Image (tube, rainbow, N blue to C red):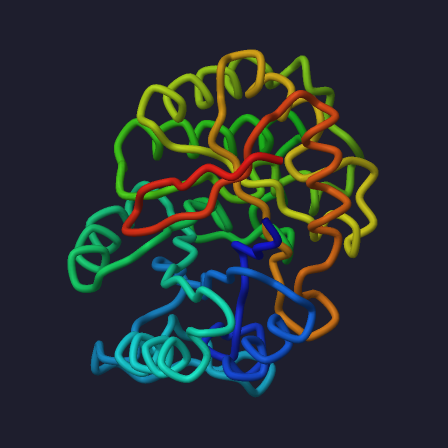
Length: 276
């Protein structure tokens, strides 16, 4: 199964990749299925229909997905290209505890196939800007990150997989934080994920960010396997043509070598298993 389950388009504020171009490119590379997962980050971004003035960052609108246009274009893509590729409807929820009610309302508004639960910021402070890490020790910001994730999986259930579970590592200027120090908290998170029938993703963008490990790292993947986790998706976290589908086949083989048997796609929020 060649599918990309983490794909951004020009509906995300950090991408200019037209949705139809994504579909055509995916077909050209022989992809069987694609799921659009554009960004929603309540707490730091607003919705287009809130009646508030849209903020701009680097000349681009700093806002969440324009949902009506997004949903309509996905329907159009299915009509135009559905005989060549399966197209699924998703979003990436960049969640924080205080934003849960907003995501509950959004999830109830539209039919989804797939939702990525990601932690992109904590206390409305982003990682890539170092606003979250600033003033904290490496131990403090790592533990606070996983604390937020733990509270989220305890309290929010309308998601499919945890996205790039150790994202904080991508922006950790202090280097690789020892896994054993966070292992108990990660294990607690994964046990809840497994008990709830949810999964995790392997995010292949680790290659383009030149990380020293996969994302999540091999230690998290092996812990998930050892705890009985079976639901896995794989996605490129694509924002541009060069990203789409990148390293999916290679990293799928790595998952098989680790002892995983299946990759999942999704339909109506239910996993569909495909043997690796």
